[in-house]
Length: 219
Image 1 (cartoon, rainbow, N blue to C red):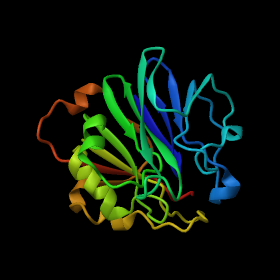
Image 2 (image 1 turned 180 degrees about the vertical axis):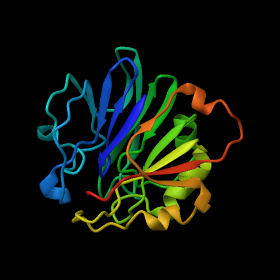
Image 3 (image 1 turned 90 degrees about the vertical axis):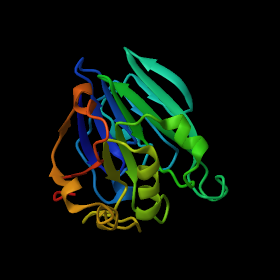
Image 4 (image 1 turned 180 degrees about the horizontal axis):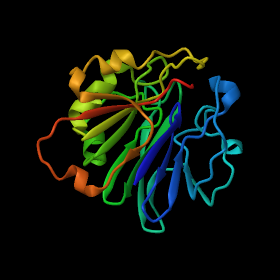
């Protein structure tokens, strides 16, 4: 399977069968930058804010998932897990749906705009995780330290930070560096264009987490 970052919290996940999933499409006017309209079979929306639910920015799609529960599309298993956008049980920013995908034998977890503290109950619902996509910019979501706690508890093979400040981003959020500095430098892989994975990449037990930061120079 392939993972391509489109910016902010939006990723295009493509299985070897050609089936594709697009996460959290965003409004360029709200975020400050955009991308060419992608097409996907499934679009997942973690919550109803403009930087995560912009379906007008999707060229073509067949199904939209925006609620918790078990879903399946052409052999891809998708689990929506309810959570909160803030640390006050949603009182400030409402609810958030974490989506977990199994594609080509790989477990991918997209945390959406998670803001609630890490809890044993939530960790148990999400594990196991091979690839974790988690916001690190703070202000509206988990910050670097809170995201690191999720990484330490979920123990993914790969963590991909998202929802952070880039050059053209107009949102009041932090850059990615406070998060990457929490890891050993040799564990951080930067300026990645596209990630290609299959289940054989995760056969080694006890390996440490890789931090993959996608190329952001054009954003």
